[in-house]
Amino acid sequence: MDKPTTQMPDDNQQRPQDQPRSLVPKGITIGLAVFSLVLSLAGYGFRLMIGEDIESVLRHAAFIVPAFVLGIPLLFWLGSRVFNKVKGTHIETRNALTLGWLTACVSMLWLMGTYS
Image 1: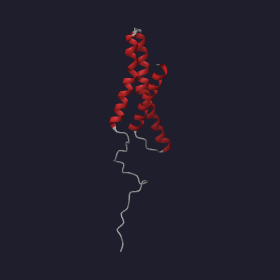
Image 2: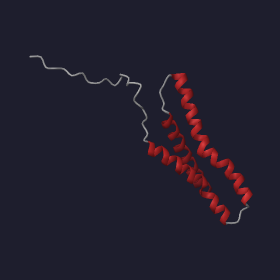
Image 3: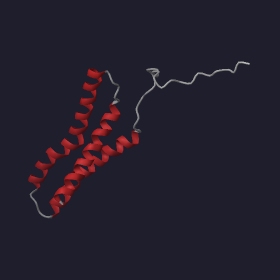
């Protein structure tokens, strides 16, 4: 008696190209992006309340907010594109951006803890 054999899918087999391979849910990506924006703006209200010059606060915010909210995630995205071309890996854009926003949030929390 021969038992019917079912072939188990092999982990090494490639998935069809039409299926997305993103590992991070979209809600987490959006949440980290919003959280990085909130964290980067958090201290400026307090600085204005204690009487610092508005021009000084805005000049500082004009540099810091885009650096953390856009700069760090875009560097991770650019790094993933280069790594995909050089090494032939497949790092999804959303995964790279999510890691960038997570790194930005952790960096800002670390800086806030250091200077508090």
